[in-house]
Amino acid sequence: MVSEGLARNSRKLIVVGLMLATFLSAMDSSVVSTAMPTITGILGGFSLYSWVFSIYLLTSTVTVPIYGKLADLYGRKRVLLFGILVFLLGSGLCGLAQSMLQLVIFRGIQGIGAGAILPITMTIFGDIFSIEERARVQGLTGSVWGISAIVGPALGGLIVDNTSWRWVFLINLPAGLLSLLVLIFFFHEKTQVHQHSVDYVGAIALMAGSAALLLALTSGGRDWEWVSAQSISVFLFAVLSIIAFLLVEVRVSEPILPLSIFADRMIAVSGIASLLAGGVMIGATTYVPLFAQGSLGTSATVAGAVLATMSIGWPIASSLSGRLILRVGYRITAVVGGVFLVLGSGLLFYFSHLSSPLLIAVASFVIGAGMGFSTTAFIVGIQNAVDWSRRGVATSSNLFLRSMGASIWVALLGAIANNVLISDLNSPRAPQMINQLLQPGSSGAVVQGMESVRLAISHASQSVFFWQLVTACITFIAICFMPSGDINDKG
Image (tube, rainbow, N blue to C red; front, side, top):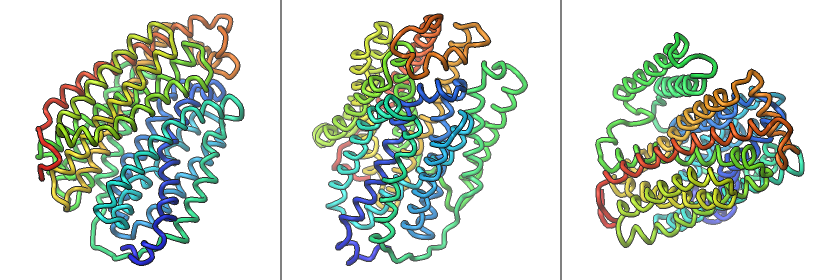
């Protein structure tokens, strides 16, 4: 519990500390996305490319519900400081990585810390601000995400083009330490111990099932045949783990993901749509920079600028969606977002055949606008469908599903891209050839003998963008099943 008097006197400094932490967490993925082609060229290990993203998404996602429980037990401050420390530890280790495998492991550690930052930050805002003030603070948080998403790709490109790629991760340390110091000295709370049970068994089962599913998707057709003993075994383990997770969730008194809330149509449909929208988002975030550098031959800076347009479209649409929801309701607003997702994904697939970074940037902007309209409508609709006592669970469940969708789709799309590359290049040296093409200094001109690699990367990216378009269409269909309603309808 926050000390009210102290909170009033120190809220501005507390907000600064919280926003710094949020900024680092929000910017991390976009910075790394732009830098990854160059990092892959230096460290090698292209086959692990998608795992750098998926392991971070996985660990940062499955830890969110546990951090929420721990915050109730031990207080917000302790849990948030722990999360920031682990995030900074992972960042430092990533900056020291000597191989792609090490980078994947250290990104997993970084994700464990990141899982605490956003949910606990949002919880603290709810603790220290009144109901009337929270809407304004949420807008401020959205602006931080928008700014970080815009700055991230360009910053990642500038870093790898002008300094060492290691600074993509090491740059987190000074800002993170400043956030820690501000929160340590100015954020004080009176912790009230509550009798809650943490659903560790459910969390472990969910993590095991998700990790096994990711492994099966990324390794199928590359490390082993899709129909093989290894593939079937891993898929079977994933299915059994997920079944165990579901059985645990219906039996425990305080599950990390209460299945009963999905009896509400608004929550269920928004959850499915968010799961799919996460796949649309991660397809563009992960493979637009690779396509720009590996196929179009742009620098990392230009690739970052191309991706940044998606981050510009998102906050613009989010701000406009607030007014649109008041006029036409959250269902129509979400449908508008779905239309933008389909349109943007279609443009991305079509423009990828025209070899123009500018057109790819336009498509990315439209996808970002679709995410802004739809995700805002999902959250408003969900929060309006339930009472106060279930609002936090419903909101976090939707964010959890969106992150899980991104985790699963980045692995699935990675499997598609890897299989296309292996088929097109038909060479045991395919990974080495891709690494050579992505090395700094080789992106501006065609390296001798590398034109076939460029064509293979182009084909692989187009395959990814096609399935991203399919996912966007299914997302739109799911959105159409949302119940109608407006901001004045109370759940």
